[in-house]
Length: 574
Image 1: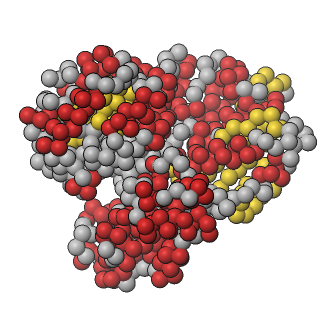
Image 2: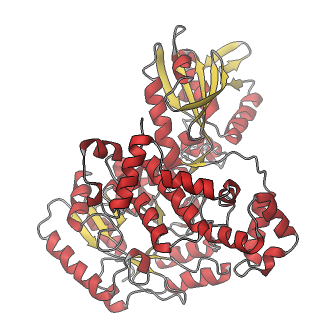
Image 3: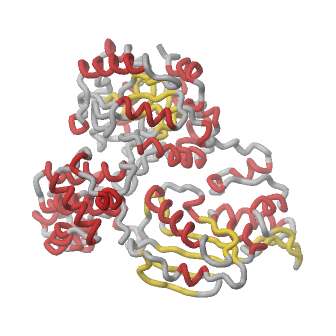
């Protein structure tokens, strides 16, 4: 039985949600959520640790009870508590959690006050005005619910890229071992590095005698086979993900990969251009009349249209085709160009590792610098630092820098933007930092005008350097707060403030559109991980994928600079 850290973390998060619906002790609920976060950040699989007899209680946030539940799931594939909760709580209540704006506490409230326990009942309560009588269900939330409930309920679930990509890679690795496989690649939204994807698309070039379809339709995590054919099959995994596999000849691989990568809008536009030139493009090749002029590579496809190759991340019909014809495509940023991380946490606040451990991990990645940005005092839930503890940490960083070789720890903090637009540290302390990473962590539901004013007001502070996770979104969990991004970007350009592209899988904030807006306005970006463990430093890859979708180049991202060049940028406002 293969039980991963993701599986255990998902179970813990589901337990937390169900306990929240029941109205359980908030400290107990938080313990499960914290444990899930620990598991997702931990570099070793729990299954291996359990087999080795490792003491799980030595891990941060994992007590005796949680350690027992981890062991239980590793050995049996399930948790009794989760099964009990699912039997106690109507499954339709859990379905309500998928509606934007409806968290566990509101599900509990709806059931307690109105006996609403299904999407249909929620629709009825919305229509007859019952929701308007419940505290906390204001006009804005009611409109959010109307919009969400008005969408097609049959729409397939979308998964975060971080969750679906490793599964796609694992299946690709398994199928690459099949007889007669020449090449196999991930296509679709995943290849374009969209922040979410609803399924996994695979394309394989195989010899005639390949057994790849047999392997595909008998994968270890298979739930059911939707369709089984010699050139195309579809399956559903035990976790509910849909996977499609297309098999072509080696000579057709390039155009098949291009077709299945999409986007649909990009492909349609290319076909229109081709048609005007008497050329036909489909998944089998590029044709003039009956003559095939390209098929074995994507580069050859674009060349047939007198265009340079367009990277998958750009293929959204958002100006990339015009840029290709004008020879103005961006030289997209690459992971190898990153020279440091400007947003990480340590055990001083809510991180898992010490300053020394984070520095060592960054050294191993070849980084020149690493910014320590623990939370400040207002964020109590993250054990935010008061001013005395900030100063204490700065002294420790100075001492550590005296012994480190090849890397410099930068003195920073993730400073709360308070509701009145002031910052959570005094200027006396802020000026002792190398720079400040500033963020909104509460009061998400105020009006667009108020939220924009709040951030613009904070930007007046000369020590405000980087705006972290600018829109506050959490994919699938929380919509972005209302914000005038045009005004924010304009002010950043005016004041020399940097916008963060936060690489955390549930954030990926800035989105691709805002990255392009910032680039066009001349605003610089910091691609940072918001790491809470040494393992989280690897999340930089997620941010780079988003940066590439946003047309960002090396010159647009400040942490591609050498340390002296970076410090010049960070200190330009002072």
